Image 1 (cartoon, rainbow, N blue to C red):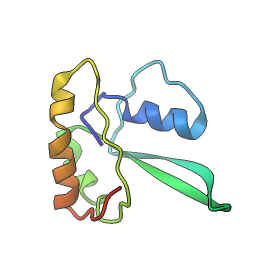
Image 2 (cartoon, rainbow, N blue to C red):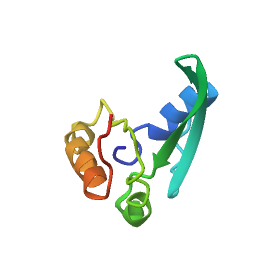
Image 3 (cartoon, one colour):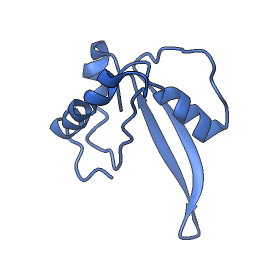
Image 4 (spheres, helix red, strand yellow):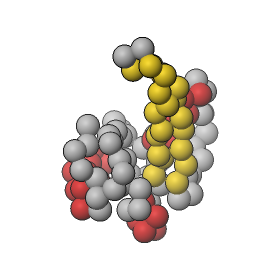
Length: 102
């Protein structure tokens, strides 16, 4: 979670697919990535929901919070305002149903 254009999609693409995205492409609504891994020797798939950061996508985003089990807060180290807004992102997720996030 985080403001628009902070690198959420790039992080997911890099981790899930091993690809580096050099050019910014705005996420429209929701995108996702899947990472196969193992937990305690058992195969699992971790689903990463890439939620668009723009306020115009709020109605779409809030439908995805209720079943979340974890969250990654993302900000741009060159933009203090994106760091300052992280608390509001966490509050939004809790307000719309995310419980016990890791």
